[in-house]
Image (tube, rainbow, N blue to C red; front, top):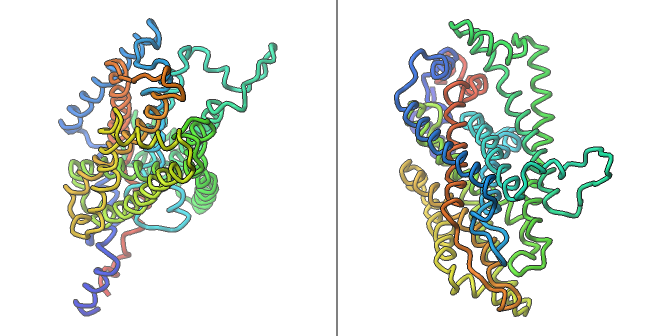
Length: 460
């Protein structure tokens, strides 16, 4: 047995444990599977699902009214032809990035702390991509013709314009969604077999049995599973960089001041991971509290997520500084005016609010005391989510509302239908999340069991 002082010094260097001591393989399986297979659904789940479903109905109403009346109900105009639809599209795509990062890159780097958060982070990715995909379709104005964007064989020979960023988005988002779905489902297979074997309801046994695809836990099955996981992780890793890079090209290929910038690809990728980890933390803190999972989602997981947020936040801050510096260094009057307009123009309040939310407040994460405070981390994660949404709003609107010609200047004011559509997609996201929490294991059972020390090795 090691001296007590040595144990404390090791913990001071490595941080709190990834899983609280005292757990066995059976206790891990029982605690996670009981959330799904429990006979009584918690009343709090019903209340949360009812609220989310109400917001989803608001989304369906807003979209139905949009299809009947047209995009004129939105606040888009000339010169601001891009409004909430593109702002929210970029925001939702960014939120989905943390799931792919946790799933793929941290798996390849063999980071054990991902095991407690990767499952619902991957699910969050799928739900965020589903919300993001709505906005380009609705922004088209004629969503029933969205299939024109795909290069399908047709007798008229009307192929898509491959130089259009809209087509790039289609390929990037569809590839991202497909690989993320495959990676998420493959990771679920061993746990679906566990639920199949432990379920007492015949219907649940059949459903989980079909989804488990005949998993029996043999050596051949595990070999194929690990091979598929590594291959999908290798495919998903470039997507972390490529997807939001392609999204940034929507802006960077334009000649409009504030968009035409080479800093956008890395700046957008860092911002996506920044907002994605903020959303993972926003979700994981209430989930661990409501389902009493503090033993599995420990302070070390929150501390590591906070460090990633701090690192990517500093990259975002660097992007802000470079954007401002290059605008003045270039000696272009249009670029200089764009920056001054952001700082002192009619949208100055949102601009300085995003600086406060994305740069100033997250600097508190340098403090270990803040990183070990769950309420502080929850508050900072919400602040970052708000700030990253404001960033997308500023990028889209302030570069458009004052054009090269003063005669073309105008203001953008989102209408109640803009807000209803945006809030409604939050309802869609939360509805899917609540269903996931109820019917599928939110934490990877078999991966978490790998963090449990073998019997007799808890203390040496």
